Length: 370
Image 1 (cartoon, one colour):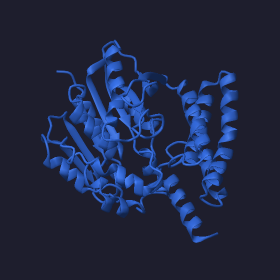
Image 2: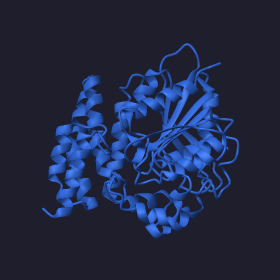
Image 3: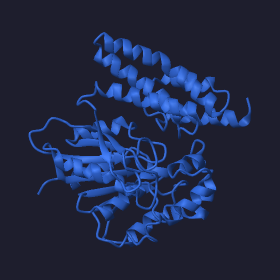
């Protein structure tokens, strides 16, 4: 075994043991067996290994659903999803990885039919200036309530899309929120590529919330994770009338888009593989150099966004982030109105036992009535 492959497999096993991406759900034994079966990180081979591992769970799920075994179907579909998600991870840059992605979405949605409350798939027309005829797709789960529900809209970054982190959604639903998940611009089923005005993809969602009699459009909180924190920050400043509060959990806003930082962070040891290709895909760039050129104007300082009135914000990250410059959190604190902030030891996202509870508790406090 070559040194690169040995290091890759060791990294994957560490991620599995630590419940880190891409292994938030999935049968642990099947994941370990798939890791053992990897002979390279060639995308076609990578996808084939994870696809083969998922196939028995897809068959098991379909049989359980046909037999009326809701619990068995839910578990098997989620296991299939987890393996297929690994097969497309971090980004479907090859047709075989794209096939894994499509199957992962199908498996997740099939599992969602057995969630309590169930997963609803909502698709809205998107009439953007350059994207006529496209659609905005998102998921919502609504706990039973006699009163209007506060809403949390959450999205991830370049590799964690709207099917991920069911555990976070369960916590949001248990806290009494309608939980909505959507892809950030440039990934998953987003109708637009990343650009300096891609926040327009959220307009149809905000409009739709106002049409729902069980949702409280005046208590909408957004959470952007990793790269998605950039879009949460921009929405807090561009749609303050639609948002009660916003969380930037690990997103860059200024230096993150410089050539210097992009070159420095492209080989961050905290990332599994293909970070440059994964970033490039978010803006439709054919190369990392093209990506660097396209995002040069993304800085919210350069756009003059950060000194506008904005919704209340919470900033969260790890102080030793290798993927996003921690300085960008300080930039946010120096601009606009005062913000809440909580920084943790460690790297990107500051993951630890108190991180998500900190986010959830703040979101709950900001969504209270009165």
